[in-house]
Length: 127
Image (cartoon, rainbow, N blue to C red; front, side, top):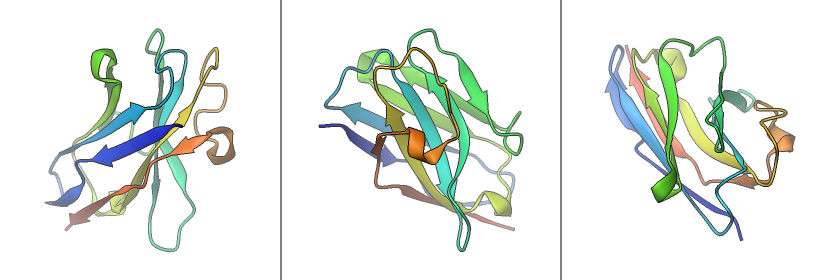
């Protein structure tokens, strides 16, 4: 059973940084696409970053390019999202998602394409 556990959320002021972690278990970590999504109040869930675990190809939404960095520690089956220069509009619940046994991130920002989700971690950015 796929289990994804996020951590690292919190409250920061605009311009600050946070690093989110997503620990994956219950499946073969390699050959998977790992995504970070967020959902703000009254908004739809949107993808912000994704990574293919074999080879490390990365994908970013335009809204976070240059500010967020997705990375992984294969030994720990963990994906990270380093968030710098945070803005109030980054305030949201952040979710980790996984799609196993895929040859690449075919739809890195498609919510229905992913088959496993974490419970989310809240990020609040104040102005």
